[in-house]
Image (tube, rainbow, N blue to C red):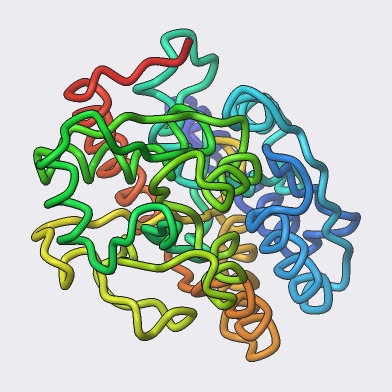
Length: 328
């Protein structure tokens, strides 16, 4: 049967759509056919780097390829994130990032990427709670209520250290100050290591450090853990109350790690990566490795990650504005 002229463009459009769908399916079936690059926007050795390497090893076995970590540190994670935003959306360049992804839009006026529009969410990966710690020889505090009472009795006397302005360690302290009404001085450092060193040395009073960093010092008694920032207790420190249990109602800060592809990555490729990530996160060996650094594997759908990012972006915008937090 011959097609009438009016139907020829329609038929050609149907054929083109069919060919594109077939090509996308073939691409997803073949993916991956060469190594995948993880972009980690922070230096080697941290929790994010460890999670990326552990996850890549497990996923590599599933997908019969290599996952290669490339550390692109700088500007609070913005250099690595921008590189992925500009990368070819083919599933071979993936960003492994922390919750700074939701914070940075409020901190940086000249951010050269859009966390919502420029990325295709893949999955939440893990959470690593922060923990309020003190040098017991310096402050003598044995509870969160001691911290609050002492700080209210002596405004501007007590200090809390952070790994730098805008880090989750800093924001945990700002949230604490905002919710309790205390007046404490923030002392920013260039990284968690120098901050912990001064905390151990008695130069500062408190710190909301990552469990990964603080746990060894808590074990030796050099630091005292007072409260974890998540809404449930951490398996890494099961005897330490949450901040809510310790008397700060509504306090919640869940430092998270997640994976994103560039916007435009084929949905079938995103789905394949999501399946492999969630299978890896359920692997007992992976879970054990993450547990050893204080990380709890979680996993999620791409939609759940997108919604979580949007919610947190709005939340941190409000706190940054309220507290007048600025990047110098």
